[in-house]
Length: 348
Ligand code: MRU
Image (cartoon, rainbow, N blue to C red):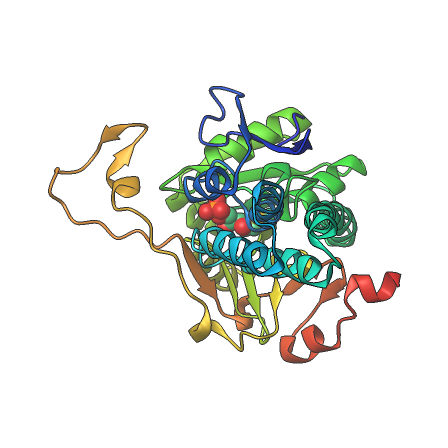
């Protein structure tokens, strides 16, 4: 598996996900403007990967700042954090990553130390992301039974975290343990992360899988072909309401109708205790052209209107369990999320 995110010679190297699966090309980024662009166009995407890329973007801003006073340096850093933070509003990992780097920089004794601290903070976040993926994937694998067919949406694998993956990590972990499972991957219109990215990853791991159009999920559930649904998350509110790729809410409604367990898998860092519930989650609305064009071809009348919310919110009441690196959490989520011990606290 190629490395989707790498920090090499003080530059950020990203596998360009807009080009997959046709081409495996890399972007080498040496300033935060380029990182912000890469996040905006989805060259790097998936909540944890966006967080890691943004942290490195801010580290680049620290290395590139020409300021020779604390005030000037902090002003450069705040401008860079604002630019990176304006890229995608829904994934909480973006904002916690930027806050983490800013806190490290602010605590540093001098400018030289602040530059090192920014890079170290980004590297620490990357390592924590890798560790969280491994732990939550192992936890989640205990929920998977021999012979399960698992439905998933979007891409939640190595590409989405830079590491092992979340929902797809659970599937990988069950497969690595020798469980005989299969996967149905929703293609995930409009940008086809399921078809282009999840199918590309599943093929590399040798996991038997079939791509379906998003509208086929109900059909397969109705015919008893799906035993579990597992999706990722961009932000989990304190009450368990969960924002994820557009279409996730529909799958949760269908799963309830067909009495199929519906799981969310995410690192605990995607839980936002400052957001009480669905009403407070900002949903990113992207360009109409992403809907009107498919593979570069216009598929609707040129002047047709289109709406393009990138995410929806699944109410906590439809979620069977939330799989995290702090354990498998069950309803009522107000209690289980508040009581969960953050993994760093466990470690330290
Ligand atoms: O628009 P994207 O591709 O960034 O959306 C990604 C998702 O919705 C993922 O399910 C989520 O970020 C979790 S990734 C581990």
